[in-house]
Image (tube, rainbow, N blue to C red; front, side, top):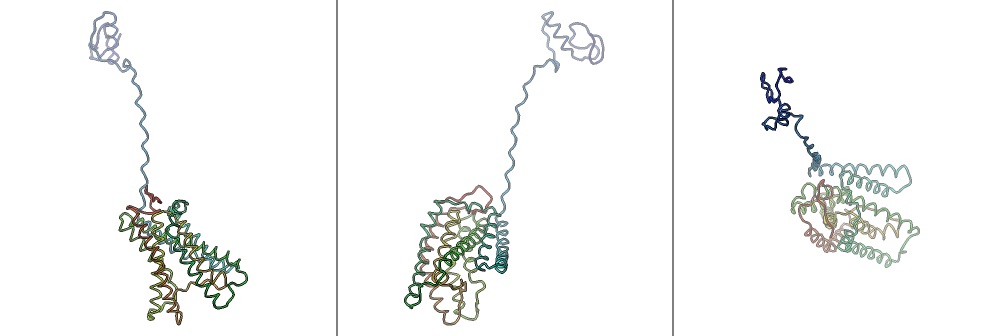
Length: 351
């Protein structure tokens, strides 16, 4: 037998090569078995018992995607809002190329663009119907529709008293057209102002309760101001300025309630229905029963200026109950609430 390292001949029972000192465990083990003399020796790797394979390590989970910063969402919402206003020009072009009504084409085009913008920023939960949220919307906001019905009945009563016919021919078709228009307005303005504008503000400032309240108020102011954009406003005329201020306040109080409602429930459907019904009942006396065009001039001149101011004051007073409901809804919202456009585990619960 020879040493596997240096080739020197070894004798039976040798545990080490006498020339190089290489351990000879196999020789020592054979000697131990034959003679019964136990000697300590280091085992070779081949003589070691088989070791069990180490358990497989579980795969490390992928790192969660970092949420988009709130100010980025706000900036994107602002850009999309401006783009949607430009997108409505497509509706005007469609109307000019066809016989379709201009207001209907522009409104439906805007509704499609605004809803798409909300979906692009991840707000699909706003369009997920929640029955509990819808019930909350109706219980808290029925007074909005009631005010519109009262104003509609007032107009119809004045028409009857004046001796004019209560309706013109063709009103059933106008009924359908105006109803479709109002549904489009509901989807358009709620997606734009409560989906994009409010959603962007909440994502940026909804970390604290003060930021939530500020987001609701600011989105309501934007909603009110946008209703006088394009009006024939004369900065030198006090009655013109008063109309603009009161219209902004009237629409802003209405928008405040809708913004608080959406912030609380996280669902646009209730706000859309309330908005559509409100507009529809206001249009019944003029654009449904009669074929007067849909007018959106909120600042008037001449003899109609003062009655318009008085009308805005009355509506603002009638809206005080829904302002109170909006305050109560905001009181039930807890921080943080970054809205539906926020990329995170937060969720809004309707109750």
